[in-house]
Image 1 (cartoon, rainbow, N blue to C red):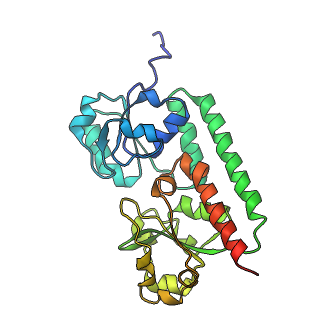
Image 2: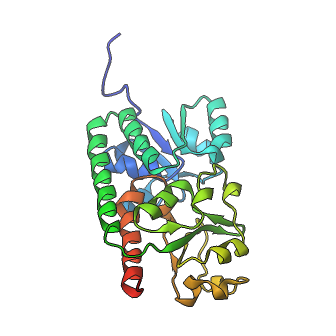
Image 3: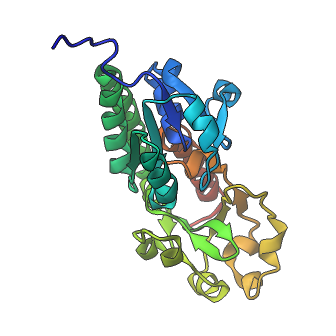
Length: 270
């Protein structure tokens, strides 16, 4: 059988989450995308693509109308969507990368799936260079700030693994690092008392799909004694950068954390 390299790779891809969209754009394969999540923000031009899903639900009629040959998603949270689409005869790939290294492995795998191995290697090299920049920056810090990263407020959810690793990489100390390995969100639940006991220097609020109310932190029980509240270091971070396990974590997330940790070190003394 003759192999046609131009058509033996996916030609019509649906992205149920944000990170494959940005990855495909960076690989020069954006023309393969025929549908995206309603939450997609990066890159800006991707917002014009047809919306076919949310994170935990999808419009199956719209997806089938696009006649995809590959549907991409992420994590067990999308298992029901994956099952339904498979039962409808669709090819579905659900990734489950949770760490910084696994994000790089995912990018490599996706690049091979779309016949862009060389572009993938170049992108990974660029991202590893960002990692090295962060490591060099960390050497300049005289104090590592204690950080509470809040992914959601009701209930309070602490940082997922790749965010925890990113905080540590850039010179911070995630006060709930021991919880970050939890595969389920409920394994990363924390209480007001937990946060107060750890007394973070910085609080990062990064609520996905909900506007952050920074003033609400000072009103929480016991928080008036927390260092981050006293010093007014309660900051909002963009979820489209930190909560999608893709290139943005490295390309933008590292720069943002470095800026905040440098500012902290400039303000405090040993």
